[in-house]
Length: 123
Image (cartoon, rainbow, N blue to C red; front, side, top):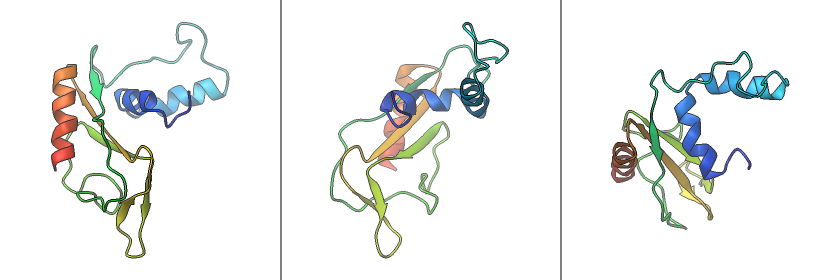
C-alpha cells in the first residue's frame, strides 16, 4: 500500500498529530509488534469511523476550496486530500484525472462520518 491509497486517506485523520510519531517510529525501526513504546491512539476516543465519498468527476473546475486546498468553509472532522488536481494559470484548482479529491469525514460512527464527508462534498 502506498500513502496515497484511499485506505490510508481514511485512517490518517484518526491518528491526528500522533500519525507523525507513529510513522517516524516505523521509519526508525522502533515500532515492535504490539506498538512497542509508541501509544497508538486515535483522537482520544476509543472508536471512530471515517468515510470518503465516491464518484469523482473529471475535467472540471473545483469549487469550494480555499487557497490552501482545504475546504473554503471548513466542516469540522473533514480533511481534503488531493490526488488528481492541479492549479490552472489563475491559481484555481482543477481536476486532472484519476482519483481527484478524497473528502475524509471523521466521527463516532460510520453513519456520522459519511454524513460529514457528504456535507463537505455539498459545500
